[in-house]
Length: 433
Image 1 (cartoon, rainbow, N blue to C red):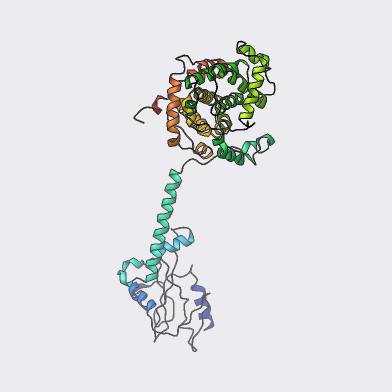
Image 2: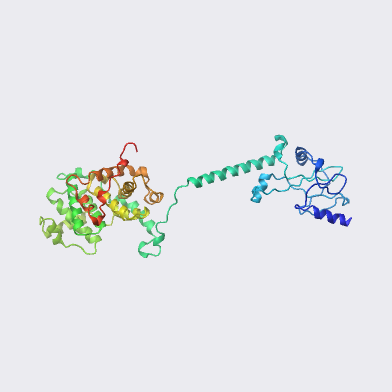
């Protein structure tokens, strides 16, 4: 008897199970043969089986109920597991999971082992247990979600780049505060803007005179070899002053020269002397007039010279665009063309900077080109830039014509990489696009 139990415990391990018990014999046979019953019958018995004395042991230890003989051992009972669920749990769909199902009987405690290859779907739908339906539905939903995730991975857009990763060890880059700084610039840029129709308040000036003055100042700025930010601040000071102060025509050049002097004092290390500025204006004004106009401008503007100009945004946006020298020079050429044009005052500085870079990228690549990283840092998408970009293309087209050619001459030199000779991005203003 003891040997029989020992042999039985040895053969019921999952790796040794090859067949099942023959009812009434109490011994293992090598195959199920005709002893295997219909799965629908087994499932029905599992769902609504009458009470029976079979004992269940979770860890496979055999027990005897009411003094039952060891000839009628009890096999552990497990819930049926579908092959698909077993593959999900095991992580490999090719590995079968053996299932053991016991049919409870009132008269006999003999149990039958069910082969794992039996498919629940062979029976009628009403014979399949409800939890099998739920399991199949869950697995189908998982498969569907996995396929959607895979498709999203395929069409995923380019990732955002950390444009400050290389400057973390540079204290001058202030990486910890750079995002807050530009958020503040974006918030306060409207304070540096002027009404786009302020020239209507000038009784002796018009927008053409403004264009002539700024075109001349661009040439003066180039001859003095001043910093780029000095030019942008000079134009900003002129517009802000003319927006609130009426000026006669013969004093307009004095306003421009004095605004250049103030910008140099704010931005430059080496500031041109007043006599130099008088000389370039053909001695039309004396020193006292320049100093008087300087006091008038700073008092009118309430000494507010710290304003975000397009150049401030250009530096950040070019970094986000991963620009090279060619793109940088072309962007500056395009935006300096806009400084001369009065109608561009309706755009805020950040939009002008973003549109200039976008137009320059389109010019160099021959197609619309605006990276996700640039959109993130500028807060402008292609549609928001198109109106301004189309005007920039038209300015680029006529840059070498007419009387206002100061910017074109400047960027036709080798120092500025002959940026003005690039072909305009005409496809941006084409109706087909």
